[in-house]
Image (cartoon, rainbow, N blue to C red; front, side, top):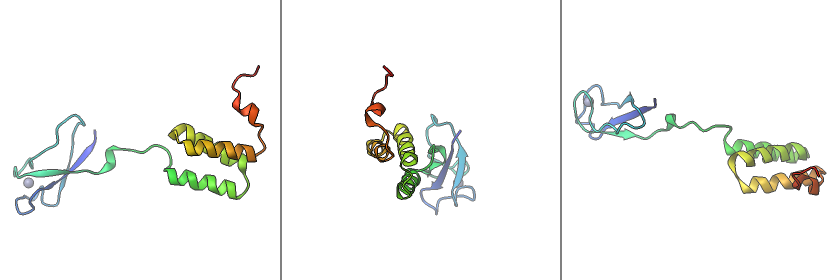
Length: 118
Ligand SMILES: [Zn+2]
């Protein structure tokens, strides 16, 4: 279950529990607290992201790697990475980039486009 952080709406109306902010574990479906459970003064939820985990490496990281490969002339490496990332993120710019890198790597484009082996 995610952890939520709260802080008092008015720091002058707070107790030892909530003055510096406090965290509580709640179900996602539970409504946010509006009061400190101890002093019952108003609190508001601080939105912060531990509940949301971004899978995979950040976009910038992958872009940088692709650029590195391109700079080193490792076109097939760059193409594969861009291709994979395009699959994952549905980014059209990466798909185009992958195709261009495949071309530079000397791949036969007609073959690459055709899915069947006929
Ligand atoms: Zn309190």
